[in-house]
Image 1 (tube, rainbow, N blue to C red):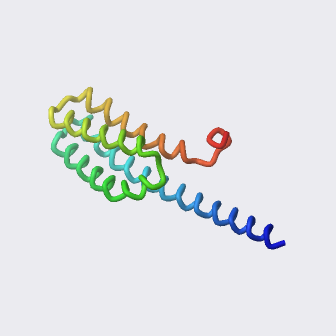
Image 2 (image 1 turned 30 degrees about the vertical axis):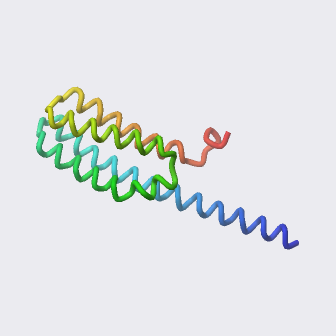
Length: 126
């Protein structure tokens, strides 16, 4: 009987940790994508200084959550996001509208991919 109770407790604990980590990942990704949408709008309107300032805020938010996300995610995912942010910053600095738009879209997709990959779905389980 103790074995069954121990297994049940372990499953409940595992499910709880999974739900909390999923919530943290979704919240962080939503926050980052909201900031990136503002950057995207600034790029579309060719407000380069505003776009760069918005990206700096996004990078600061990323740096706040990166350490926690690194525990929960594959390091390749976080490295790819960092590289994309640096590339976007350079495109904005050069005022390359097409490249900036492509990179901000890539960055949004990478961040969305994190949440899609970590969701508890049949596709991800199998």
